[in-house]
Amino acid sequence: MASPSAVPDAFTRAVAGLRVAAPREEILLEEIDAPKRLAPYGFALSATVLRGADEVADPLLPAVAWTWLTDGLDQHAATYTAIGGTITQNTSTRFGELAGPAPTADLEIRASWTPTSADLGAHLYGWCAMLASTAGLPPPGVTALSHRHRASAG
Image 1 (cartoon, one colour):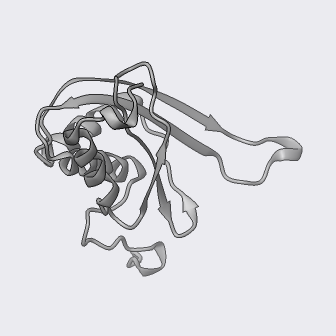
Image 2 (cartoon, rainbow, N blue to C red):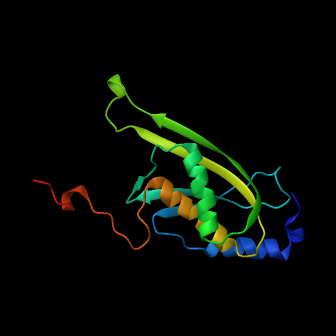
Image 3 (cartoon, rainbow, N blue to C red):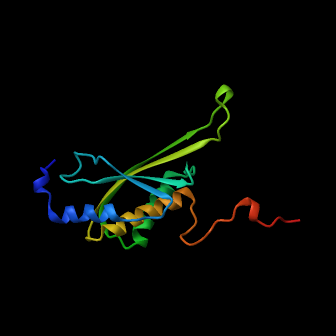
């Protein structure tokens, strides 16, 4: 990787913009080490969707999640090229002496693309839109009704 003094100003500004972005409150962003062999400069984020203190993930097909990623980028006018990635799906159901907690499902999405505009906030918000869709969050400004508040058919 290039020395810190050689980092282009455009990259430094882009990273600064990503660090101040404020997605939905249910999405926790954390900086992680970027893969070092993919590009001379890299910045990586890990994102977790939370409901209260609980991590949320629905068991969805990887192809659907990939579509939600590209749709989210498009909805936020994030222009890009060379998109690629992997999606890993894990499910766990406990049995016997380990039974108890509800089954869990995790979807790990690793993606990279080359932005073709300087507005990286649009790319981050597109990514967050995909996370919200994957976790089944309602659109911003919409409150999901709990089972207690739904009218029962009699």
